[in-house]
Image (tube, rainbow, N blue to C red; front, side, top):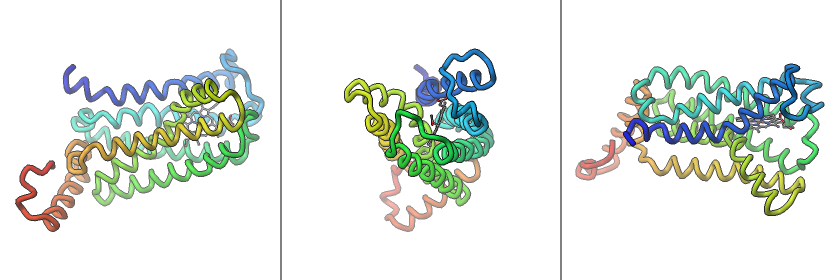
Length: 244
Ligand code: HEM
């Protein structure tokens, strides 16, 4: 496998993880649009289809386009793409978060879920928005490492929609069907995704992250700022062999 092909492994895995909710969402849009009911109709969504339609479209854009931002080589080769896609992604992510909040607060809850899921959604939606805000603020001040970390966290929170397909299956298989099991297994998906995100963030060196990101001017500014900081804090000898 070439280095270029290896660079696509993570985005491919992320697209694969997104596929279940994206396909379910497509089926829901088809059903709401009067097409064949490939999934059972839901009276709550039929009564007020706009929030769920916004949610599904924004989520699909965010999940699929967002996965491409993790292709390191592509990012390096096409920094312009990374920046343009990034702007689209922030809008899509805000669409996902605001519609998710709307669906949580103003729609009757899913029959088989309980109060824990309600609370978890009210925790993770603001957490996703906060991560986005911090990610945007970080790149604006040239701190690419912080930008990468916060954007990874925001994406991980959203992509719990994909992981939930697995945790729900395992939860039901092991503990049976109840509202608490459903809520806990969905909550577990957020925890798993955030643990993986923290591992990914820490796995790659801060300086190396900046070097690998295709961020153009902000990337260079961030790298330079960090290098200047490192030179102030460490004796010159330790900089030899330091990763960029
Ligand atoms: C912070 C992240 C997210 C939260 C809190 C969230 C929350 C919600 C809520 C409250 C609903 C209504 C569920 C119901 O009452 O039946 C919903 C529906 C849905 N969400 Fe999300 N969502 C998030 C992210 C995503 C993402 C990233 C995707 C896709 C990749 C997605 C796909 C869907 C789909 C397809 C539905 C419609 C389900 C159906 O037709 O029954 N969500 N979401």
